[in-house]
Length: 249
Image 1 (cartoon, helix red, strand yellow):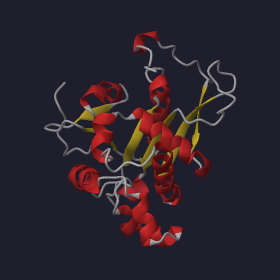
Image 2: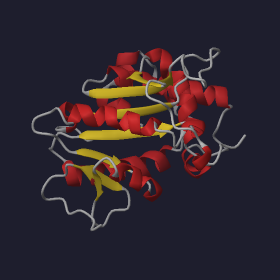
Image 3: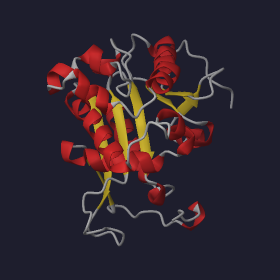
Image 4: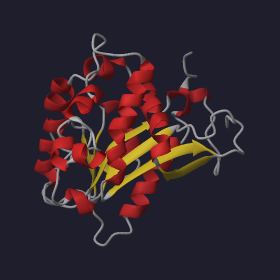
């Protein structure tokens, strides 16, 4: 079933959407939402069809890979869910996650540039030992992913680029932000963004906030004070360091 055209979608009223912290019990719903929010242009490369198990296994593997994220210090994992008063609330799925934002915080990013989506994050951060995973079990968790494409061609180069702009500077790093298709264009993403921005703006001094965005999404982030970086298609920074050259508007 296709989503309604964005102009026909009802914006959520104040109080209809709840922003709260992710728990382990949410991870399967997070995995399902992630797969629904990102299209085949990404997944056909990250998880090629010839490597994919059925969706139930895919979702469970991804949910399991996310477990150690929640215990990493200086991170913030938030979810958007519908309040029971919403006309679209589903009592059969009361805890369904409709949107998610994940942040790495200044206490972490001042000394480490490591996107937790990377396969090698487990080696660097010791997740296998912390979780009690065997090497073969962890290999199975990643067996449907083309690590060479997702990590070596994407996440590692993106981390190197982030280091070039904010390395050694404590910053908020957004990875990821998504909203399920049926709930896009209705203010959910803005609520998730605003949650992080309000916390960051309470810090003294106010730190940079860094994200990678597709060109079609840049206008949304610009509304919240993020700026494109000169010569970059995806990099956006809010409250950028003085040395960073911004794109002309």
